[in-house]
Image (cartoon, rainbow over all chains, first blue to last red; front, side, top):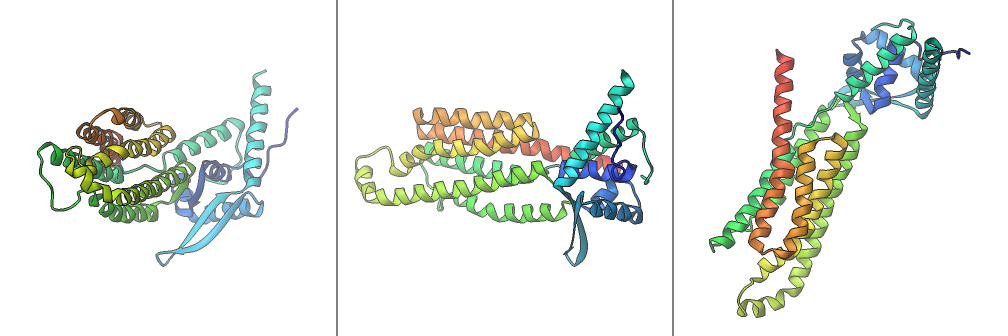
Length: 97
Length: 219
């Protein structure tokens, strides 16, 4: 039986952001932008969607007089990501049988 | 990268490539390791040389370890400021090395206090000839220091899966096992060997890798 994949995660950029954040404790916006090769505007929109879903936490602060945006994954985000991977695995198993 | 829906294979590809990119996001420059390997190695060899050739430097060479704390703090703050990402590995290692620093300070503090307490016995021991009290005291606590040196080195080696530090950490612990049975001169040589293998050599390897990465980026 196919399980519905989480629509919040089932998008290239949002999944990339979550995959990055699941392996680190905290990352700057510029780091995520650099690793995903996304535009600042698009990334900002997708980060807000993840934040609204409660999957990530976004902290805005100043570092050496420059604004700094820090992102980290929440417990709900970790659970959603793990469920997404499990659902993907079940899809693949069905596909190979 | 765009906001487009994916098929299952693309999803897996995105996940694995991003995890690989995140893993490759932080690299130790090795400068702090080089600094401490050099300082401890130098202090141990200078102490060995003073005993071997029977001379005395006008100052306690181990004061260098306190001075080395200043560049360590400056370098750590600078590296922390440059970091765009905080990894779990790095957070764990930072905690281990801070605990190590505090641990060393507490051991040195406690031992110096004991040494002062037995100060009155110094003249008695000195009049009796060898071993000199300062030497026998160093002999007493080099094993503790070597045990402490080994702990963060092996934890770092284990987290980073970095073989040169494994070798260095094991040498620290083997030395800690041996030093109670050897004289102060051998103790100091083993301490120098431990510092060089645990920190200096791995630090140089890390620094060379950093230079190679920088070169690759600029090419």
